[in-house]
Image 1 (tube, rainbow, N blue to C red):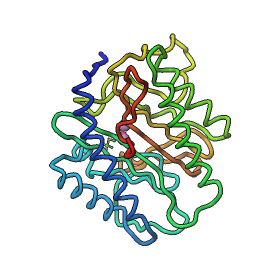
Image 2: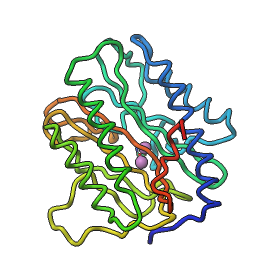
Image 3: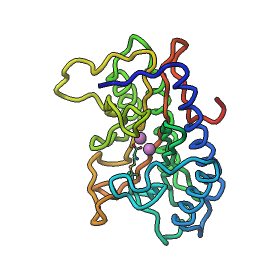
Image 4: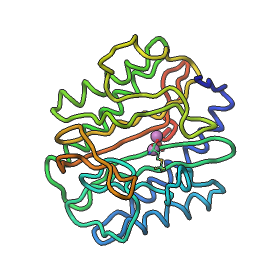
Length: 253
Ligand code: MF3
Ligand code: CO
Ligand code: CO
């Protein structure tokens, strides 16, 4: 069941989303060679708690941290550790916030110092693919129009979309219906759900420089590319309104 939100509910959700966006922006400023991903996680948690909010991921299905930190070939769900970021790395940060009954969810990939041209392009293409997906989240479209816009942009740029993880509805739950794949499913059973006013969607392309296939490490969480190629991840929580899509986790909203 897809839960539509009223204007009032969207305004309240925007508060959770703003905290998530501000947290990500502050963590971004800390990224530098030598910092550990665990330090970023500790900061994320204290920032969220200082805003009277709660980290959405901690304890979710047993996840042990407030932040997901996925470095280089890690796709998503990397667990913060004593690993130090080094020049040339790219790091994907994913962050969820729960505030007054609603969730916000956002992610982005950042370079650590100078990075390769491939890394730069991968980050830019993934960010643009997310924008293409957001622009397709309009009344009258279908969920797979979002999927199609993301996939097309990524494949035109000769990268691949991860198929094992999807975007999702979000609201009073972190993960709600509908699922939002970043590719159009082959058994094209229609176009997915019709996009309607009041839908709140977490759109989140995961893009690999090489093969789309991923494996899960022995920690049970960390997804990595099967060929060891780089991966990037961007995510916004988006409200579908009469006036078009509103990315609630964008700071310049
Ligand atoms: N990254 C997922 C999302 O954006 C949620 C992470 S769940 C966790 O929907 F448990 F790994 F944190
Ligand atoms: Co997320
Ligand atoms: Co999400």
